[in-house]
Length: 419
Image (tube, rainbow, N blue to C red; front, side):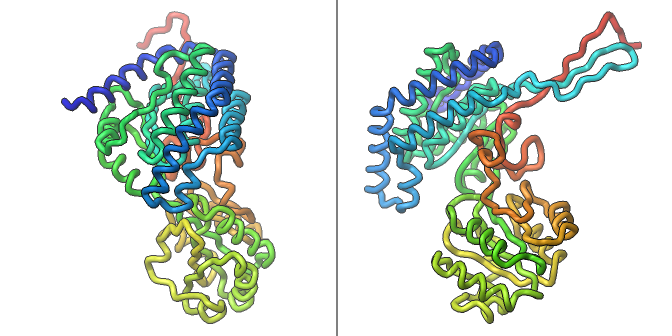
């Protein structure tokens, strides 16, 4: 057995032991620990920023793109935001122990279904150091021990952040090894972690499609993930042009490199000739490349011909595919066939059309007259999110505290026996 595998297994054993202690903590104790973490993150600012500087310098020397470097960088302001986000989680209601159902059987047995921690959760992620804090803090709030495995490009930042979280937490009563970061960047560490089903109860990969496919292919425990964010906006012929343009521009341009950014617009043929020139003029200053069908190219100056591949592409860039449809049925059919079941929105003044779209579109989050960018744990009021799931079992959509819990049944009797 390799030394690397042995070390990761040891981390798993420590995490399992920590999880047994975490279930004993009360909600006030957890909140005190979270506030201790926030205090230590602020106290360790010089150490964390110095570590981050090493990662940024290495990223630049390796020729990483500016957006990648920007995602990697931590500033005094963003570090304060990380600390403040920890304090925000402390203020959120603790879902552990929440009674989901309560009833009494005819034989007198009293039944309760309550939320409980999952146990030990593994998080595999890339690029963003703030995920170290978000993941560890949300998992801790729900009574779970965490094993983190970040990307090689942020190893110094992640190590410094994880150490601050564990140290600050321990000063306030956090059990040892509740938050562990795998210090190895070898790809094999992902495989060893994903096969450690005797210690890991759940694994959540956050990153590119290649990473997620690798984790899914080797994992021996449940995986919560999303592969792509091919998000759509359907513009019904009753839509207000100004509202539709505002929603499209915000969904596409506010932050194009994220999973809830808009990638495809579907427009009713009935309004195409008028709407395309209007939208073209509105979106032109944003520098968005347009790829569309023949009707789009005819009415949209500068638009390029779309290929079949465009309908399934998550650009994560200022590129937008646009298609003309005959109506609601074709729009829903296109989304369910080409989409990634992530986030889709309809813009219409017709409530019946909106309700049908929301009911029949098979996606984790479906909106009416709102930007796709609202598919986010913070915007849903969940606090810092652990990720967005396009799975259908256990968790779907933005994952907050409740999605990091399982449940169990408590049954109280008075001597009943089964006949």
